[in-house]
Length: 142
Image (cartoon, rainbow, N blue to C red; front, side, top):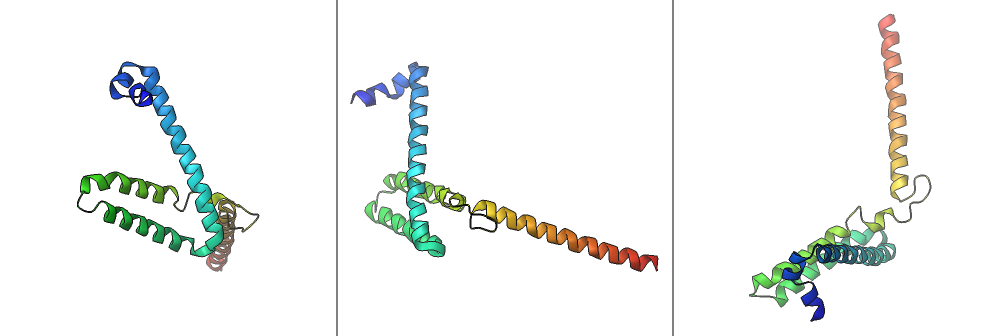
């Protein structure tokens, strides 16, 4: 109860230091939640491999169905838990913690490997383009 009085809207409105402290606590909690979820979903990604997206969608669907079933007939109480589930779903999306972990060497499964593959494709396309342009120049000169 002391904590709720300390961070009540009236006390936070009167004290900028409390407002700043509240913002820092919320950001720290978000960061810890994100790290925890990242670790859990990284483990799931390692366990399920390429089928991870199926597991992610199934978990999301089951969570939504559970919340809708639990708060049936109370739509105003359903909004906050559904928003939380959607936030977790997007926090663990394709650019989340699990996709950058394990960035292996050239052509590896990580983000760096994918960037290197794209750079190689651009190099190959530039070489092909220069050959085509040389062929067109030779044909034009004749």
